[in-house]
Image (cartoon, rainbow, N blue to C red; front, side):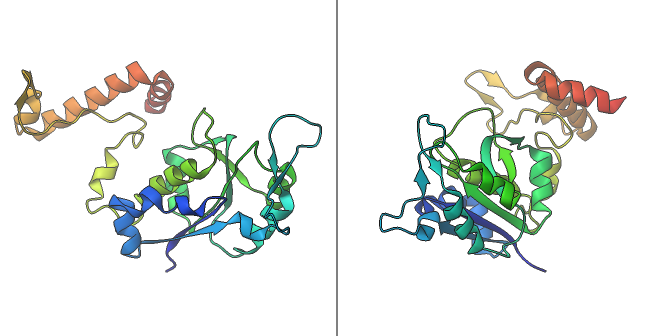
Length: 232
């Protein structure tokens, strides 16, 4: 069985593995639960200055990453597992369902843009999947790539010791997660909910569901509406 693999094309390979080399993802990488490689896009420039961008046709501010350079970079990883994903604010919104879908596949090839973005023809020619990690703009695709990879890696077999912990996380049931408490039972005059100290597992499950529903209803009405509709 092949190992899930993340391949990142970037102008800043030194940014990787970054956070992915630590904690859960880092331990999983060291244990061989997933593979990673970062490809320097500048290595595929054809001039002495290693130029990867140019002024946009039609004028306007900023620069655009060149299709020919990016195409050569993608050729160098031909056969890398999974879809070619371009991280862009205009893409499909990344969510837990998409993370699960990508984690169930062989891996991902992530294209990190910079400047004003990349030449549209590269997206068309390579049939890139466009994905956004949120309705905001980053300086480049690298932080988004790290977030996407982390969300997928933690779902891989063997990465999290107790798989039951995944079942009650935010979005797993269409709800945000319930609040958590631990020792000490009283802190700064604030006491953990008595039901959690009762040892009555059925009451605890009911309390957690009620809290998850309340928080989702108050904070994410869009998720709440979908949750209610799915329960009908």
